[in-house]
Image (cartoon, rainbow, N blue to C red; front, side, top):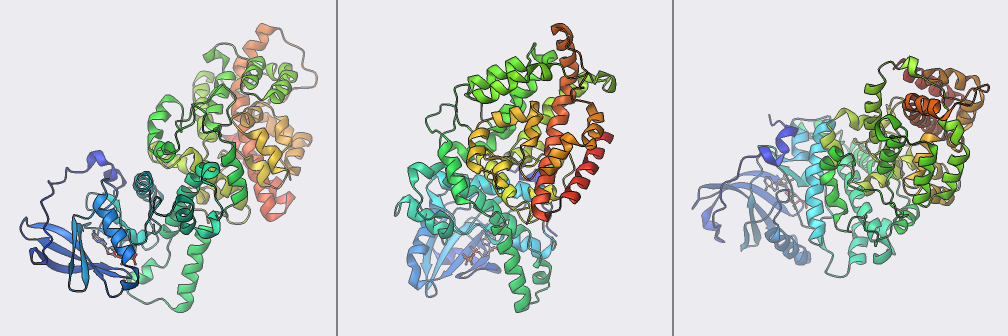
Length: 580
Ligand SMILES: Nc1ncnc2c1ncn2[C@@H]1O[C@H](COP(=O)(O)OP(=O)(O)OP(=O)(O)O)[C@@H](O)[C@H]1O
């Protein structure tokens, strides 16, 4: 039984392939063995290339059947022969035999993901396996997109696996070249409903986001096939079951619930001339560089700009905030420093707010008694804050390795995913793909809801435009992390209001007792600094947590429409947090 070993999918551990012999375009040189798969237009055989005694796959396309669409055949063979990427299957050569076109390609011994699921993983792959396969598949897609190709048929049956765990994307039968008829048309033909009337200049970043998301959602939906066991038993599904399966797939895809206008609006906020922005073509490539950035402290390879950019990058913000609220480690930075940072980045209003709250913030009561091991805790804070701020790195992803998490987490993709999550959170918590929502549904109180530039606020239907402008860049989170009042602004937030006003606040405050006591005396600057040094840890930890709780509760409320239930769950989560 084939085993997918996620670790073995790393290229470094893959054995060096033998040199490719000169394959000939002569049918006599190939001995067809067994049939290994078939699709709409082709049968695929395992075969031996006898001159070199080399195992290959021969895809026999029935030209009679594809007669009406020879262009597609030409495109497929052309594309495959030009491919040069370890995650994309290439063709060694192709030639016509009778009414068939033979395409000679590397033999992928484990077959397709669909095939594997049928025979060995009837309930679908584990999340870690999915993550690995997705990573490799995204690399393939990133390469293809750079070359101007759109695959248009990404599915489990077209993701092929070789013995040491090599993943290759195959089947270019319906792929499109962006340079053929102009980009927008091609892109529209990918997902006509979604991409009508795209303007290349305005929407190019959006397009990248869309492509990645569409692919992710489709792949994820495929990996969640639940009828694979039945197929494995070679039972034909009944028409009802087939319909059910199809609807499951469609839900898997549509659960992303694309809000095109919102995405376009966000895309248009990103300035391409910003030096800190990635080049357009580097967006997806950046996905692969995440690991390196993690070690440098910037998860997504997006560095914050101090020049008022509109970069949607909550992560980098979190870095600044961590620093700012950890004066012990980074020199003394108080609310004034935070405010300056905000001004630097063009968020004067937030800066003013923060200045006004400066004494409050600076004089937060001590929790040092409750945190005797403050230093260690503080160092954890930095890490945790980073994690919370990542657009896609949330609770479930934390359980898998940072490497895999990061690689699947592009800034734009994550942002879009977060948008989809926020918009669909109330309805379809389980449908947005195994990489995020299932874990989110079961998220504990510490998991950060995925955030985007548009923010959860907009997603809940309260003045999305205003919120988007407020939240763009990294400042929204900054102010929320240090400014508890911000929590109150969450719409539908009867819970948050209660959190502030009601006894539950007092209770939850016992976690870190971070609220300013009414009778607190003003402290001297040095005391305040010491206190801040101690308190900032709990404040920086607690506030985002509580905020996340509130967000989650707000999501739940939006879905369930039950304030009481949301409040109860909030209390439960606060209790969990407290006990940690
Ligand atoms: N190189 C290969 N090595 C091993 N198996 C392969 C290879 N290529 C294809 N297969 C198997 O054959 C099946 C059909 O191949 P392919 O998808 O290329 O055919 P198709 O007719 O283009 O299919 P579709 O209906 O998706 O268009 C795949 O799902 C896979 O199981």
